[in-house]
Image 1 (tube, rainbow, N blue to C red):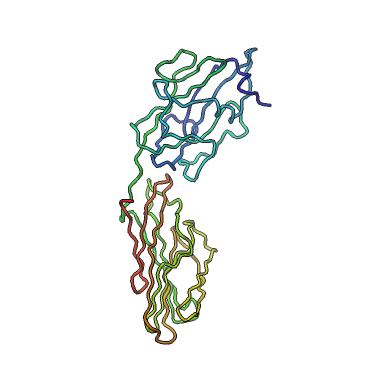
Image 2 (tube, helix red, strand yellow):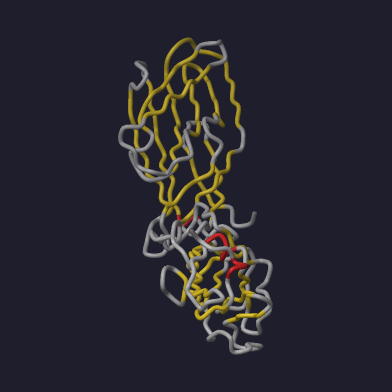
Length: 307
């Protein structure tokens, strides 16, 4: 059974690492990107025997400090819980282990870079710190060095649009165009996720026997060759058409533009609502993408540079 912090009489080791054993890492200042930090201690009881302290107990009794032994800025956030954007991905964790605490660190404001992070704690009124200055000699100087990067700014040139077309999908003279919107991937940018208003019909037009609708599907960007989506398109005379097709054949968030040439020569009608969504890379950097449908259900996409 693990002991409590109050059972510690001294520490003979206090170290800090990042990304499972490294001393250097990069951290985007977007508040979403997290890196994994490890603090390792060697705690001893009053009999100078090494005892076991849980990860949570360590987490609750340590402070992260700068080289002067002052608390790091409040723009840093540490948590035992990971979010969506931990990168690099670390498979190891301290769950069920003793004398090591793995937690996650993020920052939401740009700082002087590189920024060195040290660790400090108190045991029986005695301070143990790995800081370079104001160090009483109870612990060896030790730190991690973080390159604090500004949020990545995306442009239209970073988008990759894949179009797929199907005809007679609902048994009429019709056409479904599927748009997969994603980042152009490279060594620095990977597609991670998206945030979009799902099942949102944002454009409708009818003129003569032409009828068109444009809609979002869901927010996943992952390939799933078996997954299908059904959109229900209603027309002004109360008629409805259900269209079913795959929407995860490619990486990227999928939007549909559906049009058909069928029925009576109805009067002209057109409705449109704005649609924007977010694409996220593996670090939680985001691109705010606007969608525009022209009169023939052709969709165009552009990145909003200023939010």
